[in-house]
Length: 419
Ligand code: EPZ
Image (cartoon, rainbow, N blue to C red; front, side):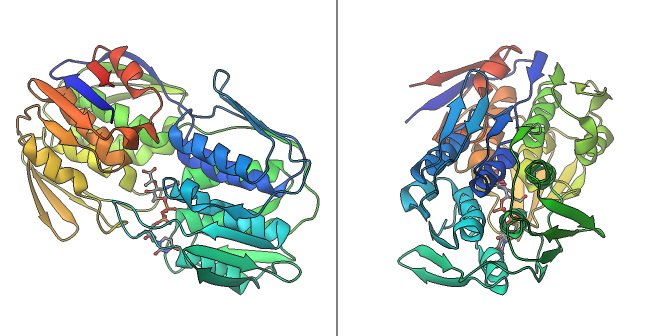
């Protein structure tokens, strides 16, 4: 099993180029199932989850080509696709369940492995399934698979999600594009990745209209157009490197981004004392002042993202005084805390709130990654800890961070992968 070794206490200076968003790429790839026209997608992040989604589409019979050098994907599905998404691909990449909506909508039948839970929570998909049932799908669960079918067409109707869900919004948005009539979705996720999916679907010719604060109306269509799309930047990768720069008291230029999309994160970090200069497609991050403590609650967009909660916890260990972070999205997203404690962090957990005592000096240690964002938080801790930190099970990291050791070493971090 590969590890990453980090020699701590190095300031980061230089430039980091942000990759395309993993969480936008995955639903957009699933949506390509809808069309038999040519699709070209650029700014693809070369990360494990995207390669797994490409393999899943190939297993379905998609003629999909991933060019890792140009970071482009070309798809031209001339033949009908298969409609069986196997467990061995979904067990490591839960977002594979996003093929359910498009397969059912286009081919009227689908057998998709239940994605199962993960380290951060049980990750149910009841909102996905109840919405598709309401649209006329017949859905059974058997031997760990979702067996779905619909007689003629999925039928448009009113769908109100009980809770904001990124995946359920995406699955049902995609399915609605070929449904009969109008589907009105309410209490939807407004994550920028959902927005990017909608831009892609509209390029295919889909008819989607924003309604009110969290609503979308989708008019089902029959014919789709060829499309070219550049994936939006990864806002979570961006937030991770902003925190890395502030933590090491360095000076980093972070490029290929649109700062207005991360205004919540930027204003919060500025309040803590991080210096962030914003330009149209990049920011410059430094931090010379003492960091002030703060309190955060993770929320659906435009609130503070749960995917930055672990990384923010590390920054709070360096702030003056006591900070708090309440995790309101997932039920078990403090797995990184026990590992940070082993590095000397003082963190109390009560229910879904972590209380972080500031001004704690972190010491290097051998630690274990448990999920994608917990693993990157341990890298961040290693950057500022005294001596050496070794992060195990970095396959979690490789699912969603492109060339992280390269991007950090180019800014002066002493980090290497141990085979
Ligand atoms: C997406 O997961 C992201 N993954 C997650 O990023 C992200 O943390 C999450 O949204 C929240 O922003 C991708 O986009 C591939 P949800 P998703 O449905 O869609 C509950 C990362 O690190 N829920 O918005 O699975 C659920 O249990 C990953 O990149 C139901 O109860 O998240 C959770 O409490 C981690 N029933 C809440 O809703 C459902 O049917 C939000 O989940 C669906 C969700």
